[in-house]
Structures are given as structure tokens and as C-alpha cells.
Image (cartoon, rainbow, N blue to C red; front, top):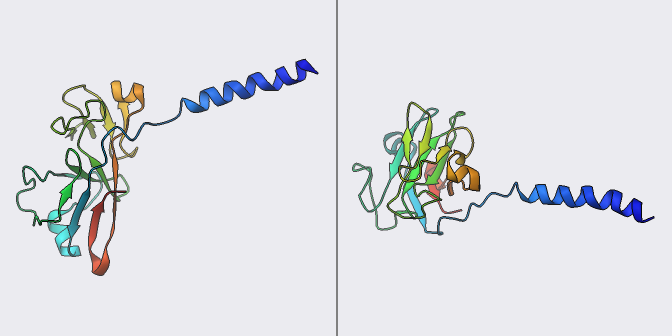
Length: 165
């Protein structure tokens, strides 16, 4: 009977051990408020993004983009917001702060040729169009640190909203 228990206990223990290695630490960036409102489809077409694999930065402190109608309610998270459309044309939003550096002013940038985002400080690379902001290279990949994801969804009367999850 002891061999029977050992026979099943060891594989179960190993499965639990390896399953825990799949955890992703997506709470590295502090939870700051995000509220970016597009009042209509026309507003989204002007200030948002349309079409697969496009991107735009929203940073309240620097009023980026300059032509966006900023309001007192607008909030852009910890390091700013990166708004992208994934390969299927669906909008996705991420915090611009690198989850390795965890500093408001160390922001990822999109490399259009690579079709990914990179941290200028640690060199980590994030898949923003295909893989929901997961790290694919560098320290963030080895430590399983993805970008903080924000919700993009419809508001009332045809609005689009980017908000904290």
C-alpha cells in the first residue's frame, strides 16, 4: 500500500509544482485610475485608432496626444496608456510603465518594425498585438511580468471608454 500512495503522490506533487510556474505576475504596476472617454464614433475615429496593429500613446502629464480633448476627469494610469488594435482589429489598452522598472517615467515604446513594444531601460519586449501584453524577451519574460491591461469598451450613446479593470 505505501508504494501505491507514493506512486500517485509524486506525480501529483510535480504537477502542482509545475502548474505554479505558469503564474503571471500582473500586479507589478500600482493600480492607478484610468478614464479616457471618446464621446462618439467620430471622436474615436479622430482621436482613437482604427485598423489592425495601430497604436497611440495617452499621457496626461504631457497632454499626449496634443489634439485630444482632455477633461478634468481624464486619467491615464501609472505611466500613461498605450492604446492598440490587435491583429483582429480589437482595441486593447496597456499601462506604458515597464513592469520590471516600476517607474512612472520609464515607459515602453512601440517598435513598428518589430511589431512589439520595448522598454528602453531593461530591454524587455512585449507582444502588444498578438499576446495581450505578455513579455516575450528580456527580464520581464523570464519573470513572467506582462503589461498592466486596461478595459476598452462601449459607453452609453456610442461612446468608447478606456477604464481601470
